[in-house]
Length: 375
Figure (cartoon, one colour):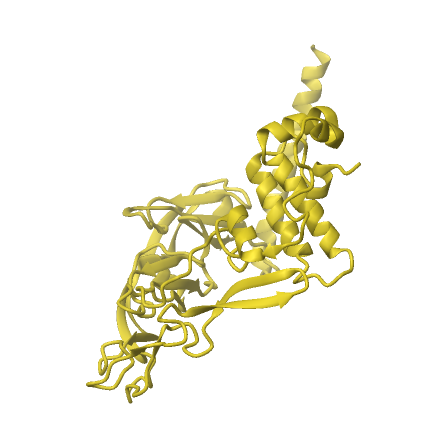
């Protein structure tokens, strides 16, 4: 005996929406007018029987308890909707999905003369690191479609008008019926005469050649906010391609690419830089001038700073893009640089420091030993 759930590839607790979705998918695969395999017709009829049963609450409850024999004993018709052939398939799929086979789900045919929104466009622009930090106004050029000024979007020459297509009656689509041994197969296709437009332009506009739209280069002043990062996106409403039949224009999306800096390293709204100091500066501390995003700034290096420690300069980082008055920090990472070439005088001084440090360590060691004795 057939397992209706297995035929449709659904679980036994599947919802009606899941069953319907599974049937749509399988019906596309096994429809005899699409699939020419010898077993396609039998598979398709089997799908119809399983679908009809599981979509009916009473039939499904009986099938779940007693199987296909239980349906027969209860007096239900178990032959399925395609038992006596397929007949007019347009009617069959209207009853199942509320639309023709070409629609598969009841999607309505679009009016070709209805307003259509224009396409969105994308433009990539490159900024220097500092430009991204502080923002700027930048002039950009885009090529987009605008409504033809000569014909105002009609596509027809001045004084002429588009004529309704006689083949499709202005709908932009026609029914196409194929006769097969299994019955009639009807589907909706694009009108071959007007190519889906619904109208014929016998005397086209010389400017746009009947398209109603014209490719135009446009200059736009764009205000890029402070704090944008690599990969940031901006949307300029209605700056994409113009719509058709009076539809609104699409949008322009600007994608920001920020050149890396050889000096600054960005992390969120903080910037990091490296600063090399010598051993004397690390031991004694120092005041040094560094380059920041706001110009030169004097910072204090505390005495005894270690290699890899940082000094933070508050509020000299990246502006917060949503609140530019708030800024991150400039973080200075200290790197201890050991000199490789020193004079004899410097060598003597380092030797003296070494001896002092050695004596200090020895003295500490002796004190630790004495403490151990008297514990």
